[in-house]
Image (cartoon, rainbow, N blue to C red; front, side, top):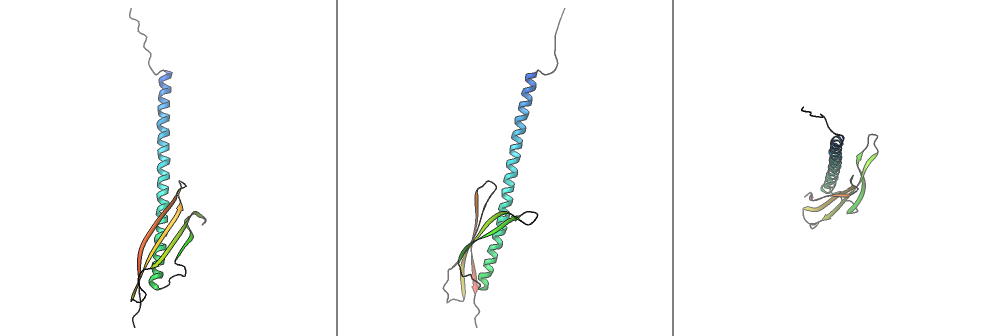
Length: 143
């Protein structure tokens, strides 16, 4: 007599091991997705700050070219990098400019060096800084 006792299916230990492995994989996947979303948000904020700094730089280049130099040659000022849906500031930053005249005043064209910066605190609670260095000419009218 050939008596075989074959049981089909999984044991409780095998089932629990499968659940644990699946839970670990799902947890790692969720952590990776959260980290990726946080990094993408940080890049979005940096892009907004870059655009704000670019506008700030162009503003001061226009003032230099038009001969409207400020009384103070360097200054930090508060700005809002991003607004929420109702118009309140969501991400605060600071803009900086420094204007240095680098050519003698007797020449027909006057050259100025312009340094602009923006700093803000990102979503990792780290202070970030972007900086532009450029030159701008101002031509005087010759009569």
